Image (cartoon, rainbow, N blue to C red; front, side, top):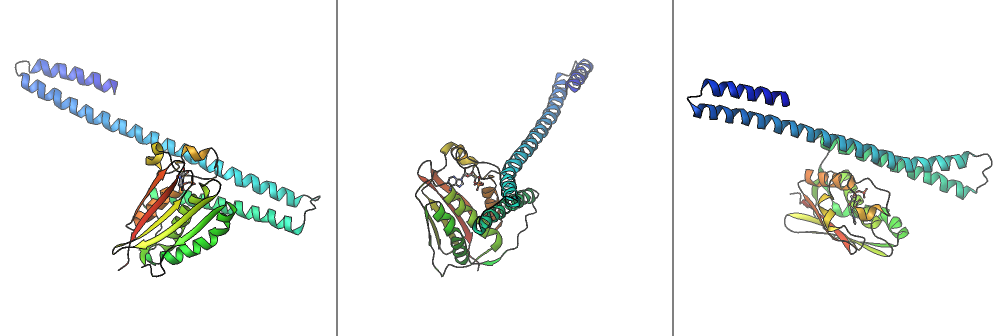
Amino acid sequence: MGLANIVAMVATYFVANRYSDQPEIVALIVIIISAIFLVISYSITQGFDKLAQANKMKTEFVSVASHQLRTPLSSMRWALNLLLDEHFQGSEQEKTSYLESVQESAERMIKLVNDLLDVSRIEMGRMIFAPRQTNLYIIAQKIIGSLTPYAKANNVALTLDAPETLPNVFTDPDRILLVVQNLIENAIKYTKGQGEVGVTMANDAKNVKVAIRDNGVGIPTSEQKHIFQKFFRSDNIMKYQTVGTGLGLFIAKSVVEESHGNIWFQSKEGLGSTFYFTLPIYK
Ligand code: ADP
């Protein structure tokens, strides 16, 4: 760039000498050369920005993948070492509980790898998406059933308020199930002590609206603008909730938008959060 600048200045000098009697031509040529340089330096800066962003993504990817894989892997190794130890004298019940913890760790790793694959597919514009008529009421019931023990273990009362007559929407049922599940899991996970998580579903003439409300730790106002960015986790939860990747909401937003819906939230630190999404009714 420096060399190009010198060449341009020398060229301008010769042009100015050649057309010294026509200052308007000189001015025009200088303006054109400056404009060309402006465009070149702008694209170079943009290129560097993109490179820096890609580099940051790579660092975040490595950090999340290694941290979030190390914990379940260590816990699997620990449980397997115990079970394989010839001096192990635990009861059948203990053995089952160690095996269950191995199973849980394996599930966690599979979920992480799937999320990372999803993110890269979303970024390449190649998300696997198979939409069809879907009933969110049935999906919510299924999820509430499977998450009730998890909520109880965390001292959280989980409730569903939705009419059986909720109209169908047009989306990928497997994907929207994971979205609702992630929103409810977050609501439980980010609620400390005695908590309440309420899921409500309703519709107007055009849309089905889903709300997942908690009275948990909330999201600091200054960080709210980053919540749907990949790998983002707010400062207030990082201190006590180490399990998480910051990928769930990024994927949720892509799935909802792919289904022509909207997703947003309201939150107050210390008071709780409500995540909403709407999907158009299937007609
Ligand atoms: P993860 O939960 O794995 O960190 P998500 O993408 O699901 O990833 O969420 C991103 C971040 O948004 C969380 O780390 C947390 O900081 C914040 N967040 C999401 N849901 C809630 C909630 N219900 N209450 C408070 N913070 C939340």
